[in-house]
Length: 265
Image (cartoon, rainbow, N blue to C red; front, side, top):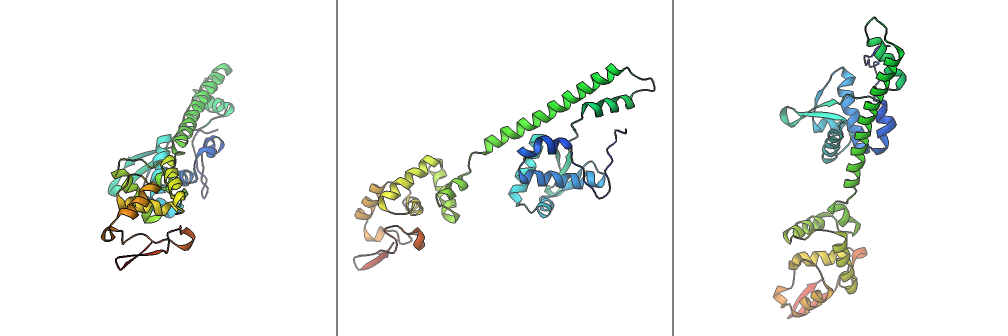
C-alpha cells in the first residue's frame, strides 16, 4: 500500500478526521471555506494557492465578513496555513495531518522500512505511537474549536439590540452613543430601557432615540416627563423619530401646540 496521497480526477478528498471528528464543531462557513482551499490546492495538485476574499465569496456565497471570520478561525484551529500574498490576498494551504488507524499505520511503516523485515512488535509500536500522536493533534484541534465556540456564544451588540427591536441606523447611532458615554451595551442595560419605556407606554426604540437626542447615558420615565414639562418650546426636539403604527406607543401621532407652534410625536 503506497503512502502517497493520490487524488482521483473529478473527486475531492477530505481528511476523514475532519468528517468523523470535527464536523459537528465546525460552522457552515468554516466548512465551506475549508473545502474551497482543498479544491484550489489539492484539487489541482498544488500545496498552496493564492485565494482572494472575492474568490471565497463567489465560491461559498458568504459575505466578506463571514469569509474573513471563517478563514481566521480555520487558521487558528490549525486546519489551514496562511501567508500574506500579493494585493491583499492570502496564500492558503491545508495543514498536513491525518487520522491513521492502527492497521494503516502498521502497514505503511512496514512497507516504508528497509528490505530487512522488522519484527511484528516494531510495527505495533510504530502504529501505536502514530495513532496516539494523530489522535492528540485531532483532540487539540477539537478542543480549540470548542473553546472558541464558547467564547463566540457571547452575542454581538447588533444581535442583542435586534432582540429588543433596535435595528438599522438607530442601532448604529446607539452603539456610537454608548461608546461615547463609555457605557457598554448589555442585556441588563437594555432591560432597563425597556422597563422605563413600559412605564410610559412607548416602544423601547423610542426611548433609545430620545436618550440619544438628549445625550442621556440611560433613560428614566421621570426624566422624560420632567424634560417635556420643563423644556421651552424652542428647545423641543423637532426631529423626533417617527415609528410605524405597530411600533407606536402612547405618544405616537400626538400633536401638541405650544405658543401657536405644533409639535408632532
